Structure formats: C-alpha cells, structure tokens
Length: 164
Image 1 (tube, rainbow, N blue to C red):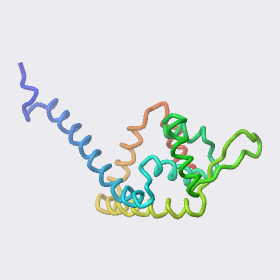
Image 2 (image 1 turned 180 degrees about the vertical axis):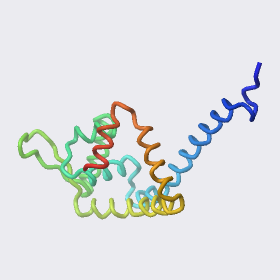
Image 3 (image 1 turned 60 degrees about the vertical axis):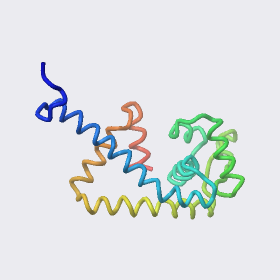
Image 4 (image 1 turned 135 degrees about the horizontal axis):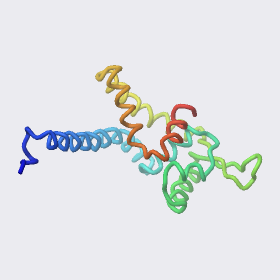
C-alpha cells in the first residue's frame, strides 16, 4: 500500500497544492478586506454594507431583486442593511419608471464618496499585486477566479463584471 502522505506521491502533492491555494485565498481575503473594514468602522458599517454599496455603485439603478440575486442573502438581511444606508443618506430608492412597484437603487453623493474611498484602497492593493505578478499571472488569476464562480451563475456574473 502506498503512503499517501509521502512527498514523492503525486496525489499528496496535488492535495497539498490545493490546500495551500485555499489557505492563500483565506489570507488574501483577510488582507483585501482589512483596509475597507477600517474605513467602514468609522461609519459603524460592516462588510454587508460594503457589498451593497459596491454593487449599487457598479450597477446604478439596479432593482432590489437584482441585488438579492447577486448577494444571495435573505430579504430580511438586505432590508436591515439597506434601511441603514438609506436612513443615513448613502443610498436612495426610486420607483421604476415602467413598473412603479420596482425599487431602483442609487448611491447618493455621500454613498459615491464612500464607495470611492473604500474601492481606492482595494484597487491600490490589487494593482500592486498585479504589477508584482506580471501580465501572464494576472490573466491566469482572473481565469481561476472565474472558474470558482458556480457554473450556473458564471455567465451572469462575468456579464455584470465585464459588460456593466
């Protein structure tokens, strides 16, 4: 019987490579969110607020339903976060022009400023990593991230990202 834990075993090496990649993702996410977390703390906001601000900023006029589909959270969870952002003047809702029942979401000027402040920190971090890694690595990174998106949602997600 072969020792699976042997460093000469290709199965072990593959498993270890996958574990290392997962761990890299955890550490990268921790540091990717650290800057925004500090900024959000000043406003007494959390990551849920960040995600809502980000996606509304990237998709001005999106419906609440579209936002729910992207975030995959309950209406109740979104309602709590959205209410806070609206009450504090970072997001505004407007009735749809065609269907008045629709609630279209927009960042206010304060919301846009906060979104830019947060995203600047993340853009700078990603830009630095891209410069250090080089063009081929960047293309591979984007391909790997796209591959992590559930297949049934991939076309929708990539369409939103690359054709906003």
